[in-house]
Amino acid sequence: MRLIAVVFVVPLCGLSLLAQASDTENGKKVFTQEAQPACTVCHTLADAGSTGTIGPNLDELKPSRETVVNAVTGGVGIMPAFEESLSAEQIQAVAAYFATVTGGDK
Image 1: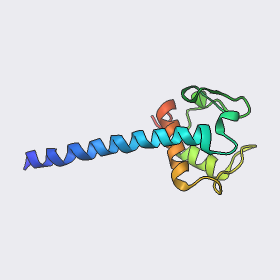
Image 2: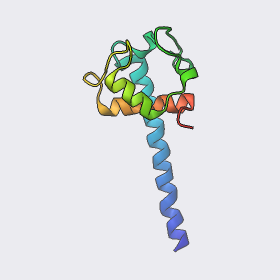
Image 3: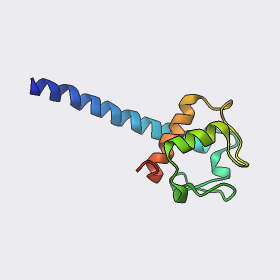
């Protein structure tokens, strides 16, 4: 029985890592290209090579996934809401991207 359990657990862990990598790649694409205006215009994020100064420096802020989802969905301060222009999947992907590259969920 233990051998069978190991056989099933390993592939599931591998799929989880693939999904996480995919979210990170998709999230970077949303941050740099798909959101309009692009997030890079306002935010600094080293991984994306962006140096915007209108919004907070995301490398320093290290926002959690939940914080990013809330901010991107509903807007905050002068940042517009992207709920109507980005899909729920795109918003989740960009949240996963920030959390991964900034360590925001640690």
